[in-house]
Length: 354
Figure 1 (cartoon, rainbow, N blue to C red):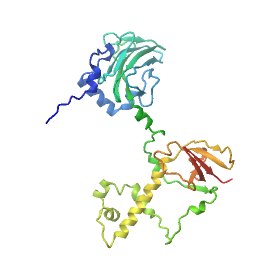
Figure 2 (figure 1 turned 90 degrees about the vertical axis):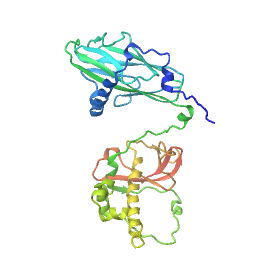
Figure 3 (figure 1 turned 135 degrees about the horizontal axis):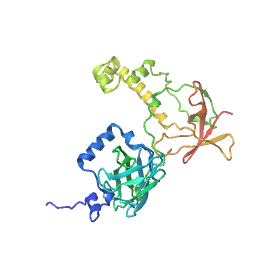
Figure 4 (figure 1 turned 180 degrees about the horizontal axis):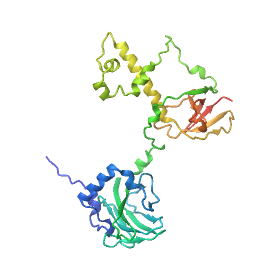
């Protein structure tokens, strides 16, 4: 038998019984669509301050974004400050949301609107109060557009400044499982080959016993030099492999053949090795300080945030390369090889050359 279930609409539920403040009226669909298109074509132009007008909050992060935590059923109140840092007056015309989000409400002392503008004298600061309240968990974004005109508004020379406000309401479990290290986006400079002069460090006592016994000696098979150029030129991308197939790309896409399987696996292993070189560099850290071990003065301690989350396992006997921050761009950078003598939660003990 069918059973009817009523699902709560969080957005509509949070809007019931709420009247938007005067400055909270949103744009029409056509107006919002036009502003969104302008944002897509030149986002930087809309988020930066203009004509001496600066918009700030205590929750600013970057690129015009304002983000703050919002515990469930706890109202959050904070001001958005608009300051005229220029030597001329600027007219504050109005502020509107591209699309209303029910958990937010905005209030200001003068109820600024298109029919009730406010003249901001040089040095003047005007606050807009933001209130946010929700009974649900989730991510709640709203785009707020501020409209201004130069002078007293009679010139008709107007400009916009946009802020992207978002509230994040997490459960206790989500907070407990949150990452402890900062997210670092992909960096193209990881593809740049590192040339360095290595200075060997001090391995832990008995580290030689960690090596596995070799029943069959393995030779050294470095990736061919031309493979790096092929990767850099995008030879193995889908588009290049379709438009300009080469012997290597054909080998990569071909089915496994008894007569050429060794060539294919050679190529796959070499590609994997080059990928590992890039992947391991995702965990590079810059401008880090190391402390001397309190008991063993020959060792240095390095903090490695997130070592238990997404980093490769660091074991006793492994090694890291460290260089001086001021020599990071030097053509012949000296890298000091530090052997891991122990791992303590998010810290590693390293042994370097004297």
